[in-house]
Length: 166
Picture 1 (cartoon, helix red, strand yellow):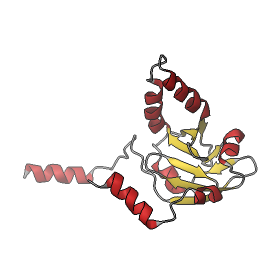
Picture 2 (cartoon, helix red, strand yellow):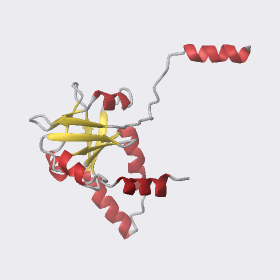
Picture 3 (cartoon, helix red, strand yellow):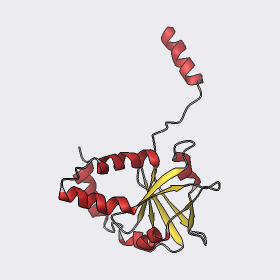
């Protein structure tokens, strides 16, 4: 009986969102405004930690930008900054990733002002495709994104079998 009462009490409690849990999926079309601001879709904003308007944006390995909630970027940053300065490859990695990072804040209308150098790197002029990839969101020029998509379903199947098969 006590177990049932505890369970009922838990059900009645107000559900609190997990602060460090982000899960971005799907794709969204958007446009930059004249000042280079990007409006984040409501579904993406809903996944951001409550009350945290600060995001990190970095240049991707492909010609795209990657947006992280700050809690997720801190995980990446801690790995990069923990690398030894006495190792040449580690220094090279730090030197080429960290300068390509900007900290941005969502304005009152849910927009991000993305630095022009970053937009140029990703080839983004007006149209934008936002791709949810788990803990981060990729920002692409739609035409460039299409070139990086797998066209052959069997190739996708092989990759899934290679990396997701237990």
